[in-house]
Length: 249
Image (tube, rainbow, N blue to C red; front, side):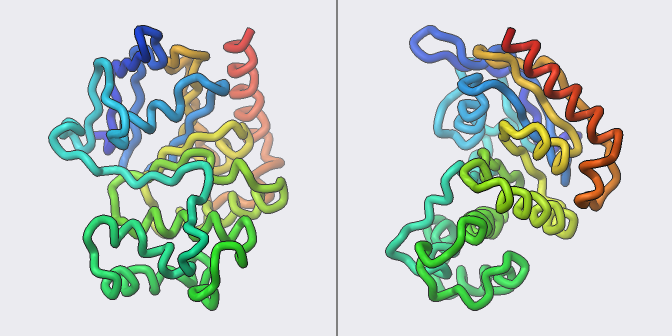
């Protein structure tokens, strides 16, 4: 059974379709990416999953249970880190737990064992403005995963980073994911990022979004810099890029 199942999902705004019969699935512990043109409906898909928007029709199930019956199954990380500038790093990391009703002391106990894993030890009392871009993204991801939700939704988490920092973050999240095996659904515009991180990649059509292709990556893990020069990596990257370009013609 899939961890997440989306079946024939439709969503319209004022009669204009944005998602059309969208169908995809994510297995337990799988890292899946979504590629698609800008404005195709990728973020709208996440909005439906988090409950920010109701679907026009279709179904979402987690562990076979309709999402409407058990909401709140997803932890969402938006494109911007959304760290509160007036709160210190540790207090930003506990914010999601506190909003969920966890006492601050208990929230800190949950966060502290992960500080070293996320490269934030020693920065607990710093403010967000004192962190590098990569550190801010790691803090935002820690704040997301510590909520212990069943599926992580990552909406272009590295899109605002410079190329070098982005590459470092991709390698870092690959290493950490190998250890924790979260179930992840990632939105990205970066074809190379999708291939490097993913088990499978879904390609969306232009709006209204539907799945036009699902590509199995199948490259061995853990993935390293050497993975980029693997002929299989190059072939998959070219296949995905060609599909995206064909859809935009």
